[in-house]
Image (tube, rainbow, N blue to C red; front, side, top):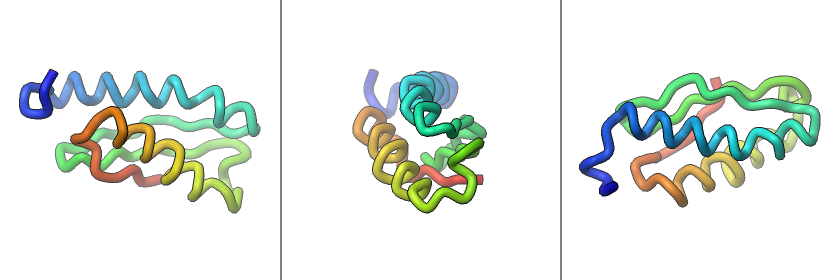
Length: 83
């Protein structure tokens, strides 16, 4: 499906699928990740839970892991933020 043909609903489903694929890696370190929102502006909001809260590596996990994985597979995604 092309970028212009993808609906917000299908984009949200794809983001949720990718987050679900990444979740076991985060859980392996005692944390968790929850999808909160996929904005029309391409900003994905997530919530980090468990050991991720206050972890000095959580910023790296968020940007280099989650954000990069989403951007690599979904060009519509511009940024991932933690809420």
